[in-house]
Amino acid sequence: MCKNLHGIATILFIISVIPMLLCWIKRMLPASYDLRWMMIVGGYLSKEKRPVPAGKFNFGQKSWYYIAVFGGFIMITTGAFMFFLDFNSASLQTIFGISHIDILRISAIVHNILGILCSLSFNWRSFSGSSFSLLISPQSIELFLLIKSTYSARG
Image (cartoon, rainbow, N blue to C red; front, side, top):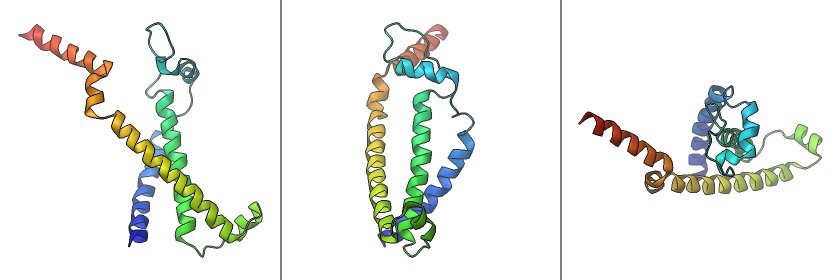
């Protein structure tokens, strides 16, 4: 039952990863300002308050994109190796010099480690993006003050 549910979820995952790759690949290509962004880690290491160099997406967001896309493809590949146990692995065996069972073992290890990392990342991102952290972030306070001043000016 769980193996079948996992297989269905994989199909939905494949359907979501491929459009993500195609839709955003052009905007996620490295740019000259990404190096400047990395040097100050998005402004966290800068002592003076100045605009952070970034285009539509900053380097941190681009990094998450590459982790999601390439990690997703690795998850899909290793999952397919395990789901289709009797696949013809002669070419992989020749290239890597390992047996079919070793390919399955490595796939299981990589798949499980990436799955654990994805779960931890999702939980961390969910917690850091919670309503509480949104309420106390500097951007939300700025937005609140802007909205307040706009409505105060009208009334």
